[in-house]
Length: 142
Image (tube, rainbow, N blue to C red; front, side, top):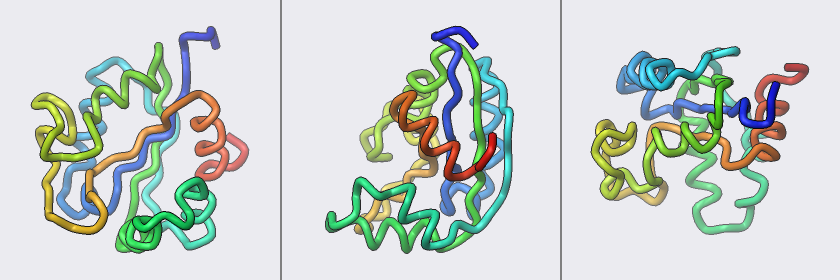
């Protein structure tokens, strides 16, 4: 893999799975030219979520976030492509669905429920280091 070809972890969170948006999110990822190299539907347990969100432990939103992520199945994917980390985060849009730009996943499909934790459909790794760590957590040995 060249330096510009990267891998990223993508989570379609429980709200996206519940609302039947998995196909639309994956369609947008593939339409952007990225390749899905791993894909799984699963329930996340407390241990995995504690490791994934370790940097947020102790923050006021940590417990509601973990509770939300345990509330239903999550689609876990690894996407690969040229600058996929930056590209997917742009495709996802800003964290707040209300302020996310039209044309982004969160801007087009996200809802602001006024909850303690934004149910914002997707997660994408924010750096190559985070991507490697997160992929290793969700897909050990990949």
